[in-house]
Length: 155
Image (cartoon, rainbow, N blue to C red; front, side, top):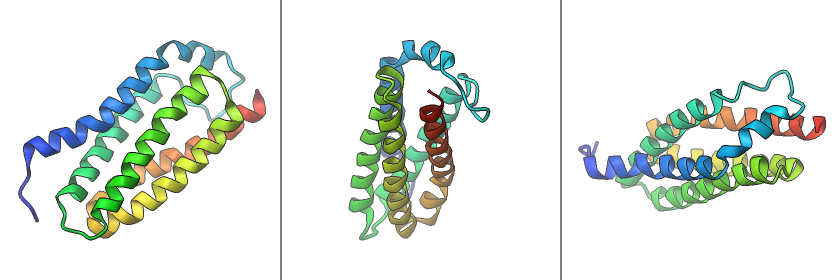
């Protein structure tokens, strides 16, 4: 296995944290509106979201680093899919929290899950650990699909 490249590792972790941080900043005033919505019983309290997302973004960044340093033929494609899912992830917050487009947000989470599953396959082919690091994200994304659908149907 390649030796840890500190600079690349830090950049890999900072990229998703920056994407999430900017999205969070842009939608920071929307959590009060979210709390006022009819919530499904499975909806976690608002404080859970930034904690979970911070962990998931760190795991994504580490996974992307493992793919970046690999010599796998799927690496470049995997990292392109990773970039696409970061963009999709970023815009979910705006669609859901800022514009409250709940049905579109539900469809957006389905799209995100599909892209994440493709990313998982590519990352796993390059580095099994990178694939395993994405499992919590896929689980959370699956939960988000259900949660988005329920918020849509209740509101």
